[in-house]
Length: 170
Image: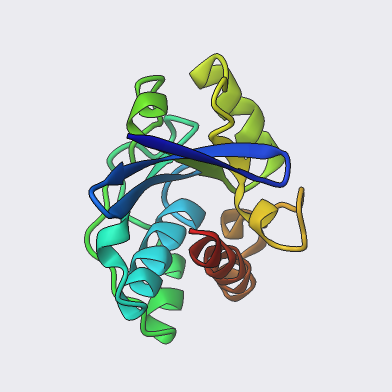
């Protein structure tokens, strides 16, 4: 059974299983080695600490093919280590059109990711595609790519802000 609700301008649909709902989230960034895997592991950790790990299925992917198969960037791992967020070995993958049917939310990190995700998906009839900071008071804001900025700490804090708001909404 599907239940839809409107969050700002987006209509999100979640699958209900019995009395528990399982929200399937795909975090997406350019290469799937910095921001999206950080978001994946941060959100998993937050859900676990809130006793809600069964409420979510969380993965991450890229819009590009540049880093396919590569592990998470060492700077991302270092930042997660500093903040006590557990993670596992990660292999970057590219988002595919079929992901639209597999996930309730496809959450990108910036406007360029949004453009490329739309190109891959073709359309977004169910309003599943949005940016992570759309769940915060900073709607429409991008999360800077630490591959270019080198600032994994700032990226971490932006992702935490978005994930906290996402956890509160669902």
